[in-house]
Image (cartoon, rainbow, N blue to C red; front, side, top):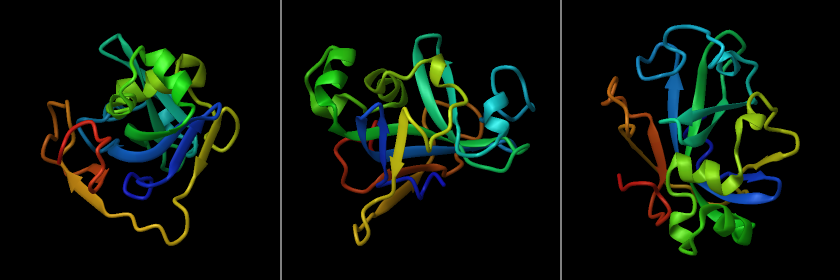
Length: 173
């Protein structure tokens, strides 16, 4: 799913853009929030699929994940970066900057630019305020693969995916 989401469009209340970077996490993966089993914090990651798992990173930034496996199996996809295409004035106001490239380059920036909060936790991704649209048919999507960022366990697992040539990635591959 993390690979398939590259090139899709994510909107929250009409604000968002093209997904250009993701990371996958699974309950068998020591770096995943679900590795130790269900808790009050991670319960949304255990299903059903197609819902939002929102958590605070370092006590500062809200991060958005798509739950992507069957109920009972804790797995998800972290949205790491977007190419902003919709609602740029709102994103600029929320982020307090003008540089389009930096609006959504990193999971905390994505959360802030889209206005993600704990209120989005567990919401279905196929209903408002969310809208997820696949890449237009015939659109070439060249996806890069590499190790995930900012983790201390399973650091070599190649579950980071990014749109080749995108200038909106959080970090180069």
